[in-house]
Image (cartoon, rainbow, N blue to C red):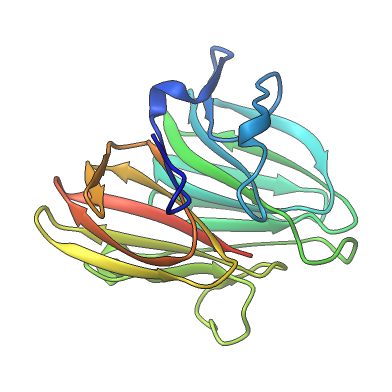
Length: 237
């Protein structure tokens, strides 16, 4: 559903690009890999939003990246990261890791658990190319974002409690109880993309199911939870 007057679009989960590799069942909100849709190349600086299900004891072998901010939001299970800088860490459900690829980094992401891991992998284009690569992870207890937005990653200096990214963007999370509402203001010339990890929601009267994507232009939106919902939102230039 596209509302051209308000620059608002709901992208149902079943319309997303898909690739099932056995060990990885991926759905793509934006063009990625063999999935190409000229209307879904990016939303502002947001370039990739993949909804991944990774089978137990499997994962992404070492591979390179450059000039991209890569944010991983773990929904269930856990992901274990290793990279060419010597970083290694396990990020569990509800928590976040950030990799600034900079002038080049190799990394691997493995599900070493005995259950499937589900996550959102989000790529945001950086403000500038090059620079030293980096990686970091941080726990974000869901109770801290009950009925309120919590900034998980940010390119703004004032967001001291968030993981740093090298782009004019924020990644936020919130949980909303059924029947409750939460507002979000999107600034002039900004772009927001939101996905409920769980639960059905309404945005100004438009319904979105769990794992649907919602692309939104500038303005104030009101999100009402039809069911208990866990939401991830990216606000970018």
